Length: 219
Image 1 (tube, rainbow, N blue to C red):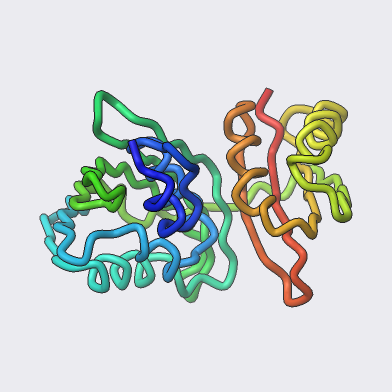
Image 2 (tube, rainbow, N blue to C red; image 1 turned 120 degrees about the horizontal axis):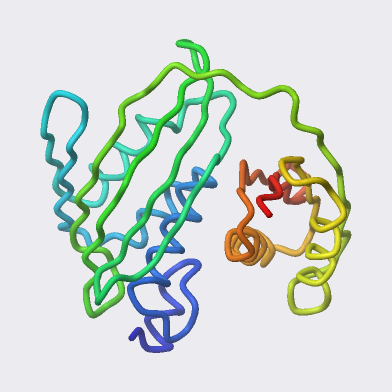
């Protein structure tokens, strides 16, 4: 478990979180393409091993590891989180995600599975990654979108319940676009949505500080 002091130094990690909490924070940072925040969760001498189509690659060090993630999907002009999950398995953390992105090559689908070794200080000391490679993909334009402006609500004062009510009022497969101004919603809302079995497509912070979270109803 992480101490309160460690929690304060690690972005997005709840107090007393174990490897699963660190994995969830790392997943949230990658999903938001906040690479600086993701790097803070890595040990400086992290070992990064990657099995990608056709070869095995290795990087060492937090900067090199994050630079690798940024090279994969940091430059996309459109980016969607199609599926994601973070959990702990007997002291080791597991992160999986599927991203749909658009760049100069067109629409692509990328799926990666990560096994994380988390040290006693709460930072990730090693990552073993299996990558699908970039697969040509199309975007389903048939999804119906439902906007919801949560105003200044936060998860501590009503946003969680309001989100549950809003997502239950749209058909399965439709997308709820939540606009919120509470900074904590950036961490809390995507985690809540995934816990409820929904798919977080994207997390975006606008120039005025508002947060937009696109969630597809999964059940």
